[in-house]
Length: 326
Ligand SMILES: NC(=O)c1ccc[n+]([C@@H]2O[C@H](COP(=O)([O-])OP(=O)(O)OC[C@H]3O[C@@H](n4cnc5c(N)ncnc54)[C@H](OP(=O)(O)O)[C@@H]3O)[C@@H](O)[C@H]2O)c1
Image 1 (cartoon, rainbow, N blue to C red):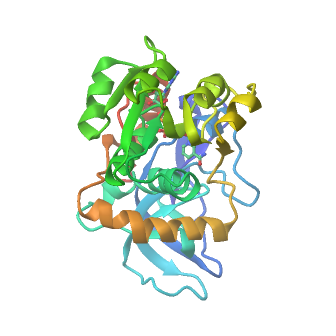
Image 2 (image 1 turned 180 degrees about the horizontal axis):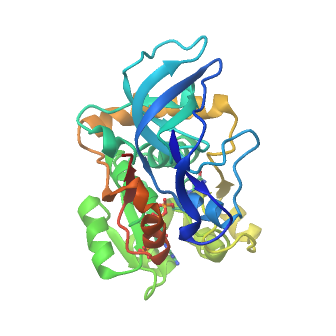
C-alpha cells in the first residue's frame, strides 16, 4: 500500500507519500481499504515530533478514516467484507489500508457519503464522550464551546442544540461567528475583541455556563472556572493555550464545579469501544435525521496533505479538512 509517512520531525514538507508494507488484521481487528481520512490538530503535533503514537501503534498519522471492510481478523462478528464504514483510529489513517480494533468501527450514517464520513469519528466520539457522557449536558443548560468554528466546535454546537441546550461560542472573527450562528450558536464571542466571561454572564443574567468544552487549556483555566454556573462542568480537551495554569479551588468549590481533562487516543480499547457504541446508538440517529451534519471545509487529494497541514496551522478552516485516497 501507499501511505503518508513523517520522514523526520518538521514542517508540512516532511510528509511523504510512499510505499509501505500492508498491515494485517490480528484477532479482533478489521482491515479497511481507506476511502478518506481527515486532519486533526494532533497530526500536526505528531509531525513536529511532540506527540508520538502510543506504544504499538503505527507511525503513520491519521486518527480517523472511512472505507470498505477488506478482511476480518479472527473472532470479529457483526461486520462483513464489503461493508462501508468509518473508524476511530489511534493512528494509520493517512494510508490506503489500515487495521483497526472492531470496537472502533462505525457504520456510515445513512445519508452521509463515504468520503464525508471520514470527517465524523473524531468529532463525534470527542464531543459525545465529553459533552454528554462526562459533562452530562441536558436540555435548557448553557454549553460554552471554545473554538466554535473548528472541527470539534462546529460539531459540538450542533450536538448542544440537538440536546436542547443553548450554545455560546468563541471564534476569531465576525464571519466565523456568523457561520457558528447558522449552526445554532446563540451567544457569539469574538475572542480577539471580547471577554468570554463577561459576554456569557451577560447573556445568562449572571448565571454562567453549565458546561464548558475547552480547547485552550492553561490560558483559559481562570476564565473557564470563573464563567462556570453553580454545578458547572469544565471539560478540557486541548492545550492550545498551554499546559500549566493556576486553578482557583476556592472559586470552584464555591460553585460546586468540576474540572475534567480527557483524551481519546490513549484510552484503553474497551473505553473507546464503549464510546463508539454510544455514538452509534445515540448520535448517529441525529446525523441520519440531518439534525447534526458533517461540516467539511474542503476535500483534498491525500497527495496535498502538506497544504492541508498548512491550512490548519494558518487558521481559517471552518469545520474539517478531509483527505481523499487516490
Ligand atoms: N482530547 C481529545 O480527545 C481531543 C480530540 C480531538 C481534538 N482535541 C483537541 O481539540 C481542539 C480542537 O480540535 P479541532 O480538530 O477542532 O481543531 P481545529 O479545527 O484546528 O480548531 C481549533 C480552533 O481553535 C480556535 N482558537 C484558536 N485560538 C483561540 C482562542 N484564543 N480562543 C478560543 N479559540 C481559539 C480556532 O478558532 P478560530 O479559527 O476562529 O480563530 C479554531 O477554531 C484541539 O486542541 C485538539 O487538539 C482533543
